[in-house]
Length: 437
Image 1 (cartoon, helix red, strand yellow):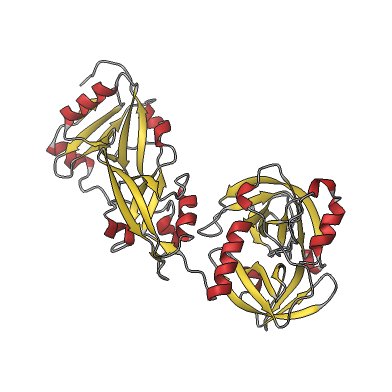
Image 2: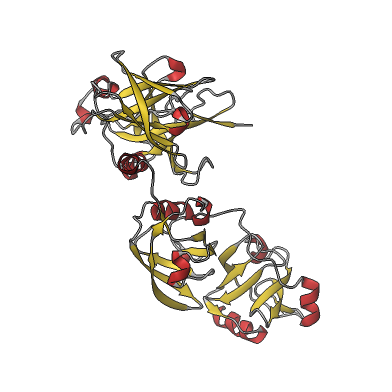
């Protein structure tokens, strides 16, 4: 079984090099090496090794929070063997980033950030760190993947690389071939704690944003609107880059604005709706007080709303804004036997299901699913409920039959499902056949 080991990396970079393709790699490395420092963080019981990136000659250094957490003494050593003591300015556990300040200005190079949104899989990169306490060491590789979620924290958005990263590299920089920082090396997948060619770096844009917050405030202030969202599980291209509201905190900015569970977010003030994780990241980086214009689809109608972003309360779990896989929607109010006693199950062979309409809650309860049907293939379960059809409320068995007939020419129909573990809009292929009761 693979284990996840944290590693400390440093931010070391110099000015952007316009003609990197004309320069030898050795020259680029020589320029940026002095902006990387080795870190020893000590307390009475332990000693942690890591690396850091000098981002300001006045003495500001960025590293991983897990390197310096609990330290009574932090010592930085430059590539020229100059030694500095440092204090923690601020630390952010959610992104594993800490900002340090040395007791006197640093006589080193200064790291500069690239725009990490511009990186591409396959780009060449190199890492500098302090593996096993040996001091500055360089490794070469490529970007293997982007936007990795390794379940390390609520804002995972890691760059994956095959550049060698070992224990002691945590907090050190991952550079592009211009000598600009594109990430902070933070973790590896490994069986024994040593490099296996699968390392992870926090993107430079995240590091820069957190470091600026820590420098200005000593802490990170995140935006909060109080909703949990999920990706729409649909094959319909029209549903791409939309999210559905799966949960909402009481008295949250979203609830005050009139957002409801089940709303489909069509637009959120320009924030990304590509995935719940990306949406969460961008909401968190939105300044409190910002007014977000929101467009939601509810019961077939578009509504324009406005949410005023607030500062995230300390007690709020970040998962509230992400795709919380463990979140549960309210349990079914009636079990299947009670539901079928109240009303007979209707057969919808075009959908591959049998369902009972609940007049009280104005929703269908699925009581049977045909084998080898599209409903089965899409992961719909007995006990799941759906409330809308093609984005419109449905008012009974005959109403659903009419909607199915209207959709036959398109060959598919869109249902909003509410199950024990999901809240999704799912597109089902319609099967032409005679209804059998």
